[in-house]
Length: 523
Image 1 (cartoon, rainbow, N blue to C red):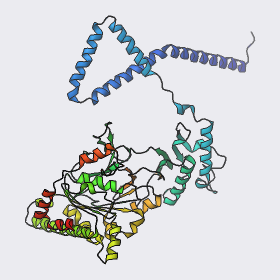
Image 2: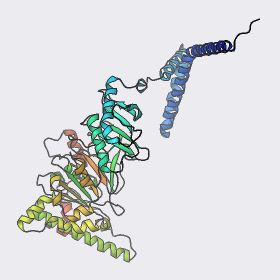
Image 3: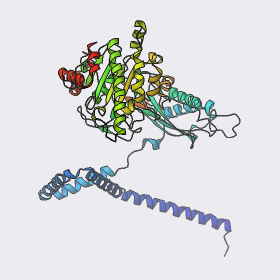
């Protein structure tokens, strides 16, 4: 009997092994095809059960009893109805099959030809900034592979980039603001202008995440916000930037929104605020919103340098000490505010030395709101009077201890006219309206992590509280209710927050506790 050669035996064994593997793979595929409906239904039942547990856990305890009674009633009706259990079982299986289907992942299919061309163009644009001649194995090179560095990407319906994760070499100077700004400018230009981008730099991992931010809501009207004493809502921002939400109580839609909360009072690290913006950007709206939030708990003195009557709706209201538009009235009102701050400091000091609690006449917060003080300063210089800003030194320096808060709003082109005391003690900053990154950094002290856009709605800007991060901000709509252009919905929202008129009570209170305010109003 002739022996078969060893190579032939090995070749025959390999062929049989391959044939066995193919048969096993075919059997597994057939089993998967047979079990696929069962797997889908099982997955759907598991998802339905998880949804039911979540609904039950999120239901308040006082509503669980009625909900359980309703479910029991439905089960009883189905059980007693003809063919009820059978129809219920068929319905449950159909719902489980629908919930258990595997969703189609568009990202698994990869980008199409147009998206690949856009990503390749973006890669080529980054080559001059992320490459070096002495690099032996560069990540970025002309004609290179973009898939090695653009690890994650997303597109919208129009084909523009919405999310991008970029790897860059370790020798890139990502710690220098100028180097970062160049990369952000290139990405903004190549990904599509007119949108706001958020840049998250990971220096340790040499990775940059670019995300397109959606517009902030502009339909939030003035209302009573759920806040603690000493908290003021400046506006609303992105959910990822704050860890708190506020429920909205005004309007047809009830929802929770992330606020920008400014804390004032004895324990505040940023007791005074400076708001800067172009004409029509919403600085007066911000001051009206702050005044309406402060009036239920404190007294407000308003000095308007523009003379446009933006705060006429607050004249003669409970808690409003005065609304001054003329230079003489502004000087008298601010001089009284400085004296009141000193009086509170003396009373508090005497009470502490005697071991007594703070006097009652020092607990009520006092708010000083100034709109465009540079205009009054120009008038004062022309008339040979003192600058009204000079009267703010005492409230600004000692206001936190005396429970006095100063809010100053000024146009962007007149910031250089603000006094040194205002610029030094207003550590809470807001910039509204269109502005460049350099302008934002000059006022806020730090550049934003997003790209400012040229076209923004009124009340849209950025805020920074002390040394905290720069946050996007949308001020709640608080227009002048006496303006004919104000809609009925917003007018009713503002009028609902205005205190009652009681001029006689205000004058009587001023005679007893604040005699100089009457003189300021008379002037």
